[in-house]
Length: 374
Ligand code: TRP
Ligand code: SF4
Image (cartoon, rainbow, N blue to C red; front, side, top):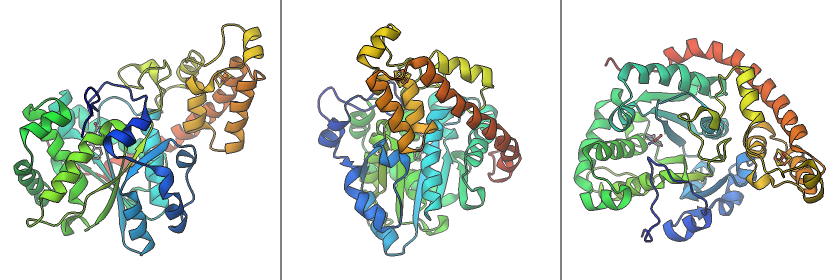
């Protein structure tokens, strides 16, 4: 039940500051409760899990239990092919790579229908961006293309579209309005298509994966709630399990606002030339004090520092190393200039290595997905 004045907007434009409320208001469970099951399933927590960046879930325990029983498990997520691939996207792909290495079958949907109907992205542009930006970068980040299903929403098979058509009879305008605050045909179509994305991999035609987890930012939860309800209401037509989901905290943009490709200085693109990446990192918002003197005395505030978040999400997988930055920042031993240089040395190496991998991945990318004809 949505509390007055607290509505999540999946297309949107709000920042979520108060994660605790998500537990209380929407019934998302703390991720920490599945840690013992994760271990039993043979999975060491990734750095995103260990650091609480992945903070919540629904029914992920059921997926892990199925995995422990030896049943096939899958993960599905989607990207709208708009703009360039940046570090916010990388975080999700890191989760896919982690799950793939632990035996989850990975499905990636290119939300090109959504990009067209909600954002008006021209079709040819969407296809090129999807393949050369999104899919190529995902492969370069370590996703094994041989073991990943990539597909375009406008180019799937009959049973998938059958779901979208039948789902339309299972939701009311009032529900759509309560969740999205808008009932335009465009949003309805996008929402039902996304529900089909999440649920169709359970059909025999698409592998029959009953246990599917969807890793999303908390702002995408309304889609998940709708999809879970639709799964329940399809009883008697086709048996569908409710999807599981995990929720991650969105990395703050380098300007302290929401990370977005429409504000290029709020993030670093994985294809940014070194000079450009360096410039963005060095002017990023920190938690530093007004003067060096003050910082030595009071210490910095890594909790609000966007450079620290780059370390935490991407640049420093070692607990010891990131812990040292945190402590030295707090104690005033580390100043922002030096700290940025340290982050930059990591970022520079990563980008250089990534650029090499990306060149190879671009050729592969066109071969692993069938592009729609118009
Ligand atoms: N709506 C998502 C976005 O805005 C894209 C998306 C489409 C998706 N289908 C999905 C995400 C299925 C997760 C699962 O980027
Ligand atoms: Fe951020 Fe580093 Fe400055 Fe601390 S010292 S506020 S972590 S840049």
